Length: 384
Image (tube, rainbow, N blue to C red):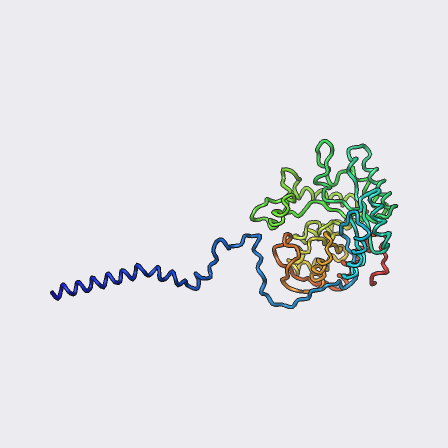
């Protein structure tokens, strides 16, 4: 009997333990651990476009609102501006120390005359207007000379330089569908006229090299291509990046008396050593920093050293005009601020750093190099 009772008690104990064990997961699930409570539901996980963490870094900041020296913006676009637009421009320019703005979108013929009258007619010393070539008659024999003659007429009507847009070398084609190469001899008379008139040529050839690469997880311009898929340059429609670079460099080399300003750091902002070698090879080549501040800002040591070494070859430019965005250029060029956000995420998902250049270098980038290249700018508005 004693043995039977002992067995019965033991069995009852086992049943009790088993019951507790069965209930334990339910009890545990009502009391989540700290790790469990911090897990984010999968429905709340941000995608690549939504993820935008706020930095907790605490470092000195110098949010400069006005350039240290008066400057010339060599790269801006204002199509058919109205008098009201020009008046507003001057007010905004005064607020940031922008002394001279170069409108690269002057057009040609009557369009150029109208733009010059609206801008320079109202403010003779504050604006410069560049002419643009027309390709409408490129299939008609004698195109090159006609293009040169049109440019000469535009200069008589107030143009102070020539701007060549990005369709040059990529989208301009002959009637038979053949691509017009950037170094096509058909343009020789036009560039010879630039040399004769001592006109600078600000030229945009190609696009960032990433636009020519596959649009996949490895492409650092993925977000921009998502926002603007038409900016992709697939090989089925466009020549390779290196083909365009070869044509551009050949164009510069065969017209040594023309000062070419390659827009957007010549699309070598991600490889400053390569750009430096081009400068060493092509003494008539210059660049602007329009819309590529993010490239310089992610490599502040290399950017500083590059700008000091090639201080006579780099010009200030912004591209898309927005008066409140210039301050990022001032901050990068004039300070050593660390790890601050760039103003246009599609250009850079990274943060940038100031690369503070010496005042003499800053003066050259801000205005001295432009004064050297662009005829007719009043130098009295700038420090010696």
